[in-house]
Image (cartoon, rainbow, N blue to C red; front, side, top):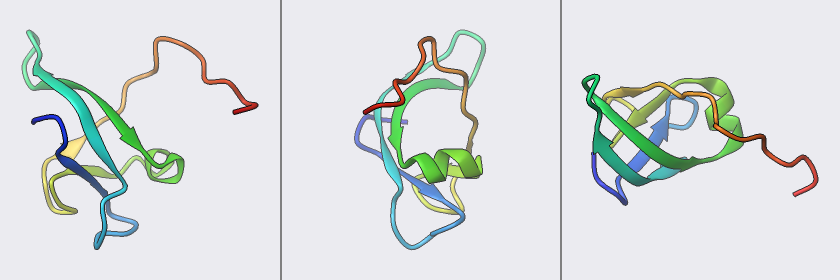
Length: 70
């Protein structure tokens, strides 16, 4: 996982729905990353790295609330 790598959703497998802003190996195994994705894609929960058939990504809770008025 590297910065700039595309993120895909099974909802629209032909085009990326976001990208990796930063990623690093996790001490617990796997990777931790900051990604920017479309809200609808994040809500679907079916995100993949590199292609719609790539490794599945799981989302964690944000450590801060999102503002509703932006």
